[in-house]
Length: 150
Image (tube, rainbow, N blue to C red; front, side, top):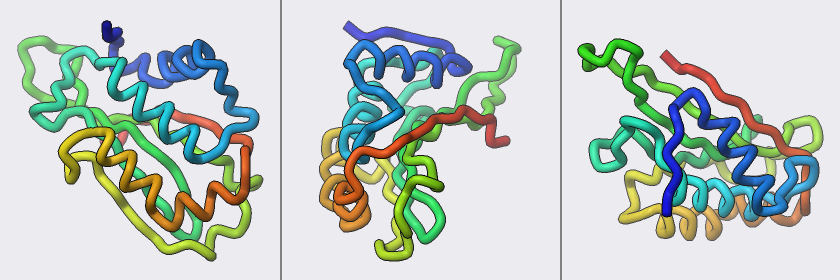
């Protein structure tokens, strides 16, 4: 059974999801955080954000100054008669000040829409050299944030 939450509750619902599974952002490995986000994506729906229409998807980015996982939404605006949508999302990842020098891994951007499902996306991310490199750092202090992007 899946839960449905409003777009603005994306981050709070993720924190509750992590807590229910005994995962703490104070010390979490990159693979554990990724798999938790994928499970969250599979189990928690966002109101009025259809995956089939491309309004809810996952993203992984790693470069010299960033390393994060993201759930991106195109959420409907407040007016139910308006077809406008606002791009927003929640980012989760190691806090950069505790993350070792990230210049050692290759830059990448992976998007879940380029894979048949979230499990295939997760597998591609887990196999990526950047994630394997991050895994060697062990559990790190991580954080999340929600933002409207448009």
